[in-house]
Length: 149
Image 1 (cartoon, rainbow, N blue to C red):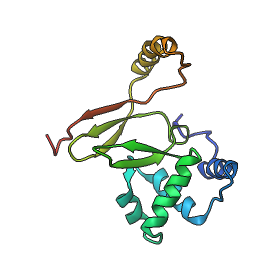
Image 2 (cartoon, rainbow, N blue to C red):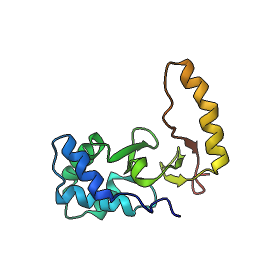
Image 3 (spheres, rainbow, N blue to C red):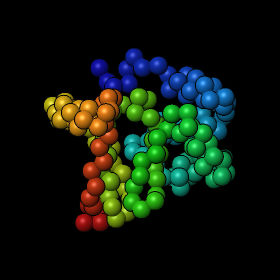
Image 4 (cartoon, rainbow, N blue to C red):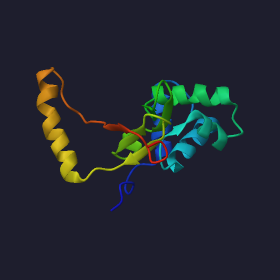
């Protein structure tokens, strides 16, 4: 079974989350969710704007901020202060990132289940010692992509 089977519709979830913060699920926000749903990796705002040419760039920024506040979208830091955006993990599925520190390219990767289990088991004592209850983890591996190496 694929990771997306038997999941509630992303638009239903986005609509409910926006409603919970008293925001509408406008056509522009729906379009941004569609673009991010179809993306194979996190997208920077210029890529999102290019894919949603009917939305002014200022609307893209404003709507991404609202979608992030609602927990529909998350920001992935690339190089410097540059950010990319993707759907929240519970909407897209658990994964990690390879981040190029030179050009900022972000690639989604999945770890074998044994590694995921080891990460969870290994991180839990550290979180507990700091007074945290571990709910999950995110892992960004930093390096240089093939073009920047």
